[in-house]
Image 1: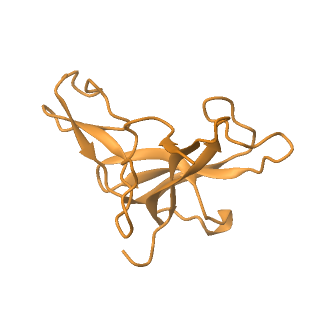
Image 2: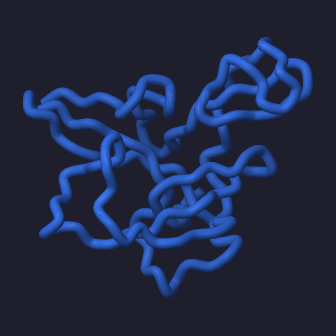
Length: 147
């Protein structure tokens, strides 16, 4: 079965072998240092067009969160249907002192979520296409104890 990322250039692919963590791919402005995710061809802060690619930290802290209580529409629709959909957590995660990124929170119990909780970038299966290709996306999960 073949595998592919949901979009090229969002995270390291192919995935690194453990114990290395997947990394989100952003860009940094060569003029003012602003960081963007996903990658950008221009700086939202100063308008500069000289942007360099960068790997973002693989660990961050939970800044805020909520729940997704309804079936999302394309392009966010996964394999769930109205009958199988269960609400899930989504949050903003502050990666170092660099940037805040929104993503699905995996392997969490809503009651256990806390501001400042450490989370790692994870890459998980999102859906399977008609030809059998597994499509992967990123999210965040409680920090591994081994790091």
